[in-house]
Image (cartoon, rainbow, N blue to C red):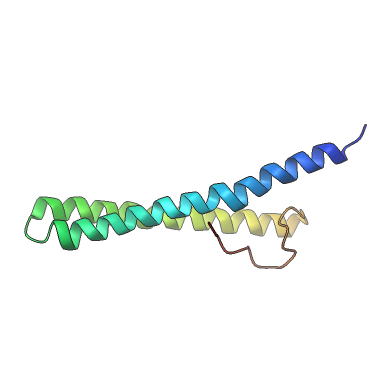
Length: 99
């Protein structure tokens, strides 16, 4: 049985996750954070209800970023510990997210 086809397929799926899906999630969390800052300081400058909504967006944006980065770091730690070579860079640090 030829496993190179399966390895190539799994490499492409992992590449899509690391280089397309993960940066998109980070961008969504960051935009949520920025929207909360905008709602808190600009749209809700004189309205306490709008400021509370903006504060919630800021909170959930930061929580999302923290969860994404934590899971990303754990995956890298496990991958490097187990010697899985699906990172493409070969270095010890995960690649910076790009769009």
